[in-house]
Structures are given as C-alpha cells and as structure tokens.
Length: 520
Image: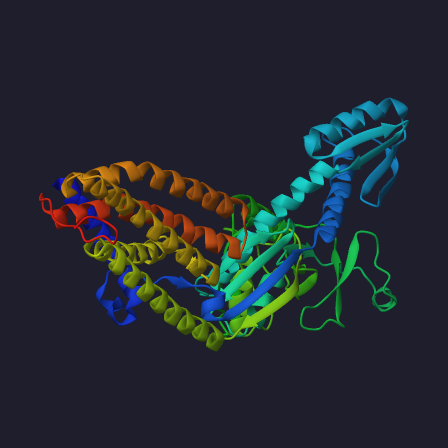
C-alpha cells in the first residue's frame, strides 16, 4: 500500500509543478521555486545572434606575446644575458639568431623552461624558431571558445536578461538566443567588446613634431582617446598593470558627483599598482581599453590597497556598462556578429495558440479512440496520459529547461509513444481474457508480460535522446530535452501509475472488462 501511495504522490507532485505553466494566474499561489516553464526564442520572440571567434587576431596577439616573452627571457640579467640579433615575427613564427654558437643549446633550454610544451622550439645552426603547432592552435581555439561563452554569459546575466541560451556551434561560433529582447543593439555592443584593459606610462619626451609626423619612438605607441579618435597620446608599449588582475568593478560617483568606475585588484595586481603609483608620482599614466585611451590622469600620490578609480567623462549608463565589461573579464579573442535575427513576440504567440488548438484536438481524438476500444481501461489510459503530459511540462520547468518548437515536437512524439506503451498491456490482458483467464489474473499477467517490451522500447529511445542532447546543438537539444524527460515520465506512468489505477479499478475482483473483441 505504501508503494502505491508513493506512486500517486509523485504523480500529483509532477502535475502540480505544471500548474504555473498551464494556469499562469495561479502561479502567485505557488512557492518561488515552482516557476512556469521558460519559453524559447521561437515561442516568446526575441533576438538571436551568431558570433564568430576571431581566431586570426587571437593568434597574432599570441605570437606577439611570444615575441616579447622570448626577448625578456634571453635578456634576463638574473639568469645571464644571451646575446642575439634579428628577432622577428613573420607569419606566426618568431625567429632569432644567437650570436655565439655555444649559447644555442643554452638559449633553447631557457626558452623550453619558460614555455614548456605550449610552444614548438627548433633550431637550424644559430637560428632558433618558436611557433605553435596545429594541435596547439586547435587547443587554443577550443579554450578561447569555452572562455568566450562563459564571459558572454556573465555579461548578459549582469544586464538582467532572463533565460538566455548561449552555446557553441561549429567549432568557432557562439549562438546567443535572447527571448523577450526586441532591440539587441546594446547587448551586441557589450558582448562585441574585447574589454582588454591595460595600464601604461605616458611617454612625455615625445615632441609635438614627432606626434604630428606620426613617428613613434621605439617602445612607444600613439593611441587614440576613446571619445576623440583624432587626438592621440604617446604611451609606452610596456604593460605596467594588466586588467586580468581586476577582481571587481562598480559604477560610482566621484566627489564632483560625476560617474566613474571603481576598480579592485587582486593581491598581485595591487602590489604592481602600488609600485607604479609610488615610483611615478607626478607622472601621467594611461588607462587603455581595447587599444583606446579611456583617460590619462597624473599620479598625485601613491595608491596602495589595490583600489583605483577610472574617470573619463562617462554617462551613468556608460559607467555601468564599462563596470560590467571589466567585471566579467576580457575576451580571449574578438567576437564578430555574422548573423542577426529578430523574432516578433506576435509570431511566438500565434505559434503557441496554434499549438494549443492542435494539442487539444489530438488529445480529444486519442481519448475517444481509447474509450471506444478499451472502455474503462481506456479511461485509465487517458488519465495516465494527462498525468504524463503534466509531469513532462512540470519537470521541464523544474529543471530550468527552455521549451521550444522542437521541444513541443518531442512532447508530441513522447505522448504518441506513451499511447502505445499504455495499449500494449491492455492487448496482453485482452489475449488472456480471450483464452479464458479470469479478468483479475489476466490484468496482472498482461502487465507482467508487456513490461519487458515497454522497457526495451523506451530505454533505447532514451539512449538516443541522451546522445542527441550530448552532441546536438540548438533545436536538436531542445527536442532531446523534452524527449528524454518524456521517456522517463512515460515509464513511470505506464509501468507503475497505470498498474495502480487498474488495481484500484479491479478492487481485487473479477470485473467484466468491456474490450472490443474481448469476452464480456
């Protein structure tokens, strides 16, 4: 008896989970953890963006870092300077010539120690070459893709956008779906920025003539102001402090009530920032975001503690957006929007309305068929199907899955299979009744003999659904989610719930079963 009550309790619980979705007006009366099912882009309307990870730019930056790090390692005075010449970066290969042939093996060993297995190092005579292999590049692309997805997710979540779907597609693409978003321009602007922040000292020795001619001294770059691209400022190429050291950033107001962005560094960044501001008092340093200068204030006094303030004539919204970018981290590679699609909410509403009509009509015809063929058992099968539908919707909502048009197709397919799973035991019961077996025993035998076929058929489909979910993307995963949930609820309702209802219907007696084609 306890087992039967537990089965009924689980069935009722699953149906209650679906009530906020089926009857939204009742949602306020349910606990906060029971929410309506999330609707996908095709049902709710919204925006869809397909982003491409700019791997070529990423490899150029990686090779440039390789160039700088190789140079730094060879001229490290603590380890001993190794003399070299012709340091070059051409077509993704960094090469240099060691002046003393006896130092070649020493130089290779030092570079190998610095880069490990992340870089291929070879030599031809006195010439040493450093490059990334195809395998290493593939790993870098996968890492950049995974990091980009996480950073894009953090940026979108910080804007309060609900129920976004962000997933990889095709190796170097990211599909972003934003249900309920009609104007994706601001989101495009945020997720499209690399948000790579660095702090550089300003080269005050550059003359006005050099600036006018655009001739930057070695180790210096002319970078534009973010709000005035025609105005350039000479900054040293050396990065004094990297934005990677930031742990938090928030929009705030300064003493003049102007919007600013406050920053907090980690322990390592705080030490470097304090050292920078201590050693260069009364000098200017530039705050650079994605190759453009946000501001170039003068250091008035040392700034210990790892807390700083960025001003740049921001609006309040601009300060909030920059804080979001810095807080979520810099993208490992630029992202380019290569496809944009907007789905109107009206189209989604029409789809839902049409789906409701089709669902009601289909369910009605199924119920009529079940009652005509199986009489009382047909009513039990109909109840089981309704519970199954409620449990699919309820657990889909509970797990936070998003319901899409392919997901609805998965529900319809599951219900069709559930009809077959319900009918199979009844057919076995009818065979037993035709053979003269008492109806009570026939009911038990029918379920026992049908269960193996029901389990085999549904479990193999469940495996297919899990494979689709693991390796599929977009619509395929939406289909796989509801299909997999539906298979589990079908097994529960058909294997256990229907048997409990049949037992209660028979009530331990040999009742007449009004099957079409069976004995009365």
